[in-house]
Image (cartoon, rainbow, N blue to C red; front, side, top):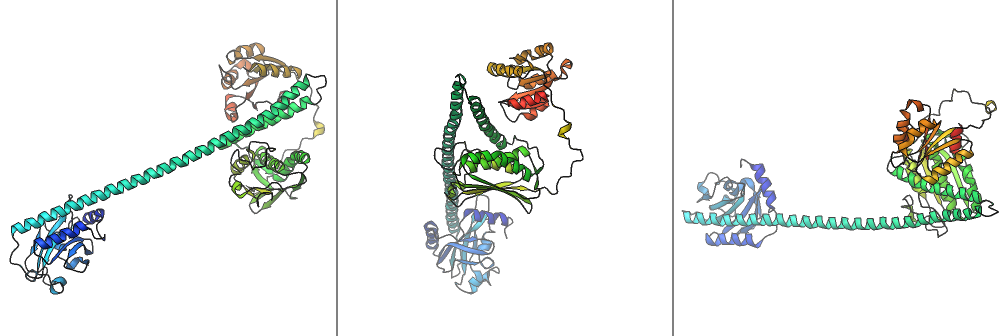
Amino acid sequence: MPEREAERLAALRDYGLMDTPPEAVFDEIAALASYVFHAPIAGIGLLDERRQWFKARIGIDFTEAPREAVFCAHTILEPDILVVLDALDDPRFVSCPYVVGPPGVRFYAGVPLITREGHALGALCVVDTEPRESFEPEQKDALKTLGRHLMAHMELRCSSAFLARALRERRQSEQAQHALLLERERELGRLNEMKDHFLALLAHELRNPLASIVNALELLRSPAPEDAAAIIETQVTHLSRLIEDLLDLSRVTRGKIALRKTALDLVEAVRAAARAARSAFFKGGQQFILELPETPVWVQADPVRFEQIVSNLLANAAKFTGPGKQVRLCLEAAEAHALLRVRDEGIGISPAMLERIFEPFVQADAGRDRTGLGLGLPLVRQLASLHGGSVEVRSEGPGRGAEFIVRLPLQASPPAPSSEPAEEAALVSPRLPVCRRVLVVEDNAALGSTLSRLLSRWGHEPRLVNSGAVVLEEALAFRPEVALVDIGLPERDGFSVAKCLCSTPELAGVRLFAMSGYGGEEEHAREAGFHEFLLKPVDPLALRHLLEG
């Protein structure tokens, strides 16, 4: 047994010759050896852990033999050549089955096939059934030369196979990269189509409210403005909701939204959301049915975000359900989950659209009379996921309606009753008008001016500052009770202004309200010292309530 047998066997596998089909070069070398050395038998044998296998053979009809019974097992232990003039005179082979039985070997000469690393893979041998008196040095050299040429061919074959394999793998890699590039190109094309579709939808959704506002402004200039102010208020609310949906989807997708979970009775929450949505169904002529359990259904949820889930699903049902059709909202507790179902008799959803309905900016094809950016359902899925729940959609196809099912985990046990006594409304004194000094820090001239005029109309005393650089000086002179500070100031941002005001002892009692057109900055605002965070456009009623509180 060779000293480095494991390495030799590994090298044999690397050459990839065992159990391969015949090859002309090997057959020719075996035939040449038989002819040159006048041997009726010749072969190129390779030796693995249990057998000798012939890559080429002359004069024998078997392709392999047990390793322990062959001359080759001894040849690979020799440095250059093994010669046996008469096997019957050699104790190593006198009882060999191929000596005492067919083919009756008497003479053997073999050279080991040695790799560059020194591993003998097998042997090139010539065999005779008659003993010989000698095997001359010239004959030995000739056999060794033939063996070296054979080994050179084996090396070349191995290298060629390696290169072919490398080229094949490279082609496969290039094909895979090409396929990936094509897939990315298709994806970019799809995203570009989505972008164009989104921009077209956004332009439509912005132009309609703006057109209504322009018309209402013209009505305000007329002697009979009628409901122009209400029209403007409605359209501004619509635009604000549109922008808020865009920001919400962005915040949720980037993980920038924080839920304020509390014990929430879904029965009351769904009833409140349904109450707010009834006007939309009345306007659309749909029949709205609400089914609620008689007992509370408790979950841990953010009340505002849960209301957003319900209102988005109901708005979707109202949008895609025609007059006279039915929309049903059901709530139930099933095992460990609360199930919220919104079932409509609307236009339905095709099987292909079912897979994409929760993607942003995707809408069912319902004609040009439908509005919206296709953000409501993606928000529902993301918000449900943030609550540890899920949402699924079912539809039997176009014209067959649709059902959306939201699952939220139930709270393990109902919340403990509050120990604080309820405040009786009869004991609350009526709120008296409050006049406050309000510092308005806003670089947008139109926004700052209109906000200051609004504050004056409410009975407050405002002072407008257009630059963050002079806020401290103005505040020390004015001594405000409240400061409304825009976050996006050009010279000194609102966070820096808030920290400056908070660190000034003379202004210790000032309440700071942040105003920002950017969502997701609430936490940063609190860290800077703000007491309230108001998202632009600021709701006038909410601001008035805060100032009077």
